[in-house]
Length: 392
Image (tube, rainbow, N blue to C red; front, side, top):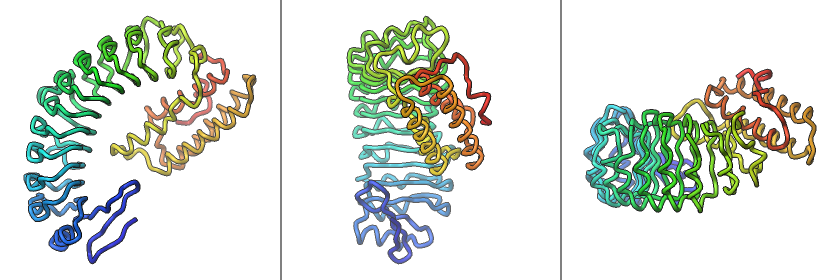
């Protein structure tokens, strides 16, 4: 819901219990007066006419701040927000940000400027979901000094090791996405409270054995990470309920360790000891739709996608699943192949309609999902049969 008070725009976002005031550079004084008069706790700055945030000195009661501006270069005004709990950023990569100015911060989201420092002063920080973290050390030695972090999601960072993360003794969830230079994750072995771990598109990791020390781990995702020598490390993970190693090879081929894990998802390979249908309890509804990953990337700023293209994709996939389920317990190879063909042709049209949004990664995710569903239902094929029909 969007409405105005005078010249100032107010927004009520879905799932929010409080309204957000959008700062107007043209009517800055009016914005500040309204914040103080009506007690707005959430404000957003999206203007490309501002170069600093010094005006925050006049609205120190703000607790939640969104900044999405390429022109703001000076963030020193953040020091006035002594009650700031939540900060969301979408600013220029070449800027400098000193987080030590806001020691009250509890949650940090968005794209970090290239020169971001000051994590060591954030003793109240609990949630970090950021892209573009590029510490000179190429590790987490500074971020690890914010010792009360419970959830950490780092995307497209220039990390080579996770050194420093061992200090985050309260960490319960860790995601590292798109750090292709990351080659050493051994420091995670100290994270005894970790219940969820996701590693995606981190292709330089060779040794995953330290994961076996995470005694409380319940959910593990190792997607598009090149290869693991073995998944034998999972035998010590007594609490593991979900294991997804889609598009990640297992060099010794032994998937017998998966038999004791309730939910397992992986890309089938000829040399693997097991197929998906051989794993006890494997079900179609346990395979995540590729649109789950697409929405995450869209929310992270990937403009490849739109809500419309993702909604259309979900509609097509749900219809595909419904038809697959309608085949009964003993579907013929011909019927399964026919349904695969029909959904592929449907996506040819969807891709064309929405400006050819299916690129390399999306193609792999989508084709793999379509085949996974068919194979769990009984389709027997060692090849990617989608190639003969798809135009993406």
